[in-house]
Length: 443
View 1: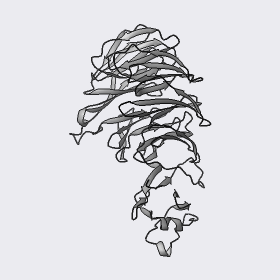
View 2: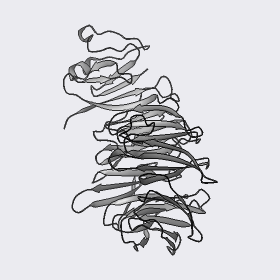
View 3: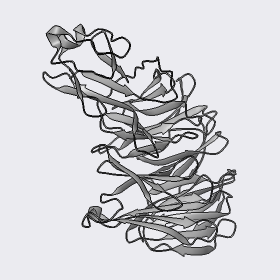
View 4: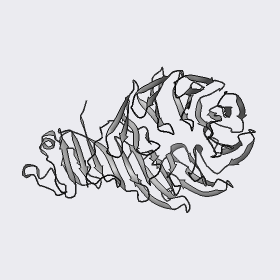
């Protein structure tokens, strides 16, 4: 297998200025990425069948979580005690597995066995002691995080279960399905409280209001519906999206509701912000691959998140374009494009930075400016292939004979190498190579 060299350009403002950091390489597109609840760790797939957990204060990898099949997703519980991963193999058997890990030690705790098809969604409750999962097998399953034991199976759906959500209190569970309905159950007993009829197409997503009194459901019928959790009554329908609604989220300050929609062939990509109290529309941002003048996303929207203080909205699309908006004014703050595959996002819980997962890399971005703070990327060691710095400057040839001869740069000054002067150009970086296979760079 082709050997890869990992380069990391480090510009992280809250790290010591004297530190170099190391992170291991991977050779697949990032399929998921997330911060731990305290923001000190990051989890992402580190290879096809492993998830890596990194300490972001020093760049050291803490755990490598190995799986039998490709890893598709991973989440921390709200306390940071557990990590839940899902993996699957897309064959005729649709093999899928869920594994619960100790987040502190990286030890495997439990295999959560029961689903017979691909797991579509998973979530911890607010206490972190229970897990709810959804699957293409038409069931939702409730598990104990402490023991890994299956508590209950909810198997009364006629189609795939798309989304599962705990209320903030953990008292009820909501599920959505391709059968055009959402259901609300008591978390303790599993007793069905309400089946919510009203959507005319696949119900793609759901989320509770922060107070747990309302449930918001998204559908391919181009609407979002609002329901009374206690009575099951439909309260309101939010219209205006010209395509399938895929995502709903509340801002951390509970002032805004975000909904996003994406149409077929990158047409009708819309972001809508609503006032939570009145449910009046605040901003509508439209994008269309056929309209070059539109300020919204031209490609399909993949992810949309508020930053930690609700002042910014960060959105990505399948073309690798990231847009950052001011939530109050609706103004576009910055636009960047990190290339195909750069469409998974995660926001830091207390700092104004976010992660972008892409093809063979992930980056830490300063939210207001869109500036890269950290970039991890790979370069094949094929002859004459070059590594580039964050600003596009060529600084080292990746041929093995060159790499092995590089020495430590001191005081940030470029020391020319007479035999390799044309291969090594670093006017403003410190460079250090260890064992000929890992490159560290710092401004």
